[in-house]
Length: 103
Image 1 (cartoon, rainbow, N blue to C red):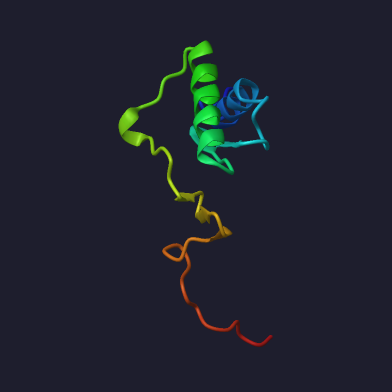
Image 2 (spheres, helix red, strand yellow; image 1 turned 180 degrees about the vertical axis):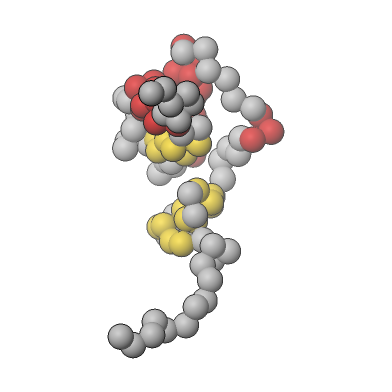
């Protein structure tokens, strides 16, 4: 039985991990086609962005400029807000449901 494109996301995720393997968990997080580059300083960030862009170019991968954000002090990524103070849930994604019912 063939599954067509059912495995496409996991195959692409594996491919992106292979492309950016040297940077993962050092200054890059990848989820399918979302790439997050994080750094402690602006100088490091500029170097990290350049390294990632060169690596993508080496694999003939291209970015859509209108979908890119560079040098952001805070980003929303996969339902979280990430900034200097840490990682927290995106308030826009959290709904107040009240306390859970007693069993």
